[in-house]
Length: 380
Picture 1 (tube, rainbow, N blue to C red):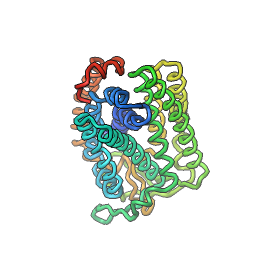
Picture 2 (picture 1 turned 135 degrees about the horizontal axis):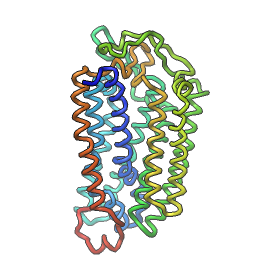
Picture 3 (picture 1 turned 60 degrees about the horizontal axis):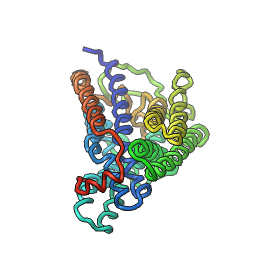
């Protein structure tokens, strides 16, 4: 069996892969939902937009469910603490996600403009709100979350919901929302034509520029805006059993930059985030839409990877009790659990990727207004 310290790193990487996979796969249909009321003019055009993601959106939810399940199984302390501290934020995500299945299923049941417009805006909420809140959550992680543990490792969150909505966290939410909208725009540009495609391209360019500006702005804010990072100052035994209170942590202005200083190759991640977004916008303009989609996916990989690389080995820092901060070394499950999950992932992850690829290949091609009008009784 793989040794315990290696499995801890492997699962940090696997959770990162799942988060990126969720952003790419579920993110593009959330981006399409965000753009739905704006790129579709009239019922036929909005049905075109919906039908580009209608056959796939529920399958893409597998990435979201798998990511949550992986955090629960691999990082149980992170799962318990995050759902305690971010309880109302997670409920807001859940409530917003309710609009997606009912919106896709109920919209076409009644042919009435008010009915369909209501569900269109419901799909907008289901596409716009979750990325915004996930970005806000990442912004709070970079600042530290106010929680502590008692002697029995029971977490207590001492902040409020409104404290989560601080300026830096909202800026991080803009980054997340803009990159998801950009990704949805590239997908729409690839699957549509004519006026809808033109509007999708315009949305892609605007969202890409906003994502780059907000991403760079967040980085500058972290560097000179007085947001201190976290650094472990005591010795760490990577093979030790989980105990988040068995270390010493201090705050430092340079902490979130330490990994980049010691490993200069990590600067490729923020460079990929900026260059990928700008390339996606440029490729969309010249109608190289599939390449634009790939560039957009690379941009999201770079942006998410930038935050992960900056925080490593921290997963959920504590601003009120720094020593209680959760890291990849002390918030994980047992050696046996991580090992069994690793082999299960090694078997089932390729199956998910293969099936998803097959489904997209079967349902590839443009969705047009003519097709929608010729098939008025389709599901969406």
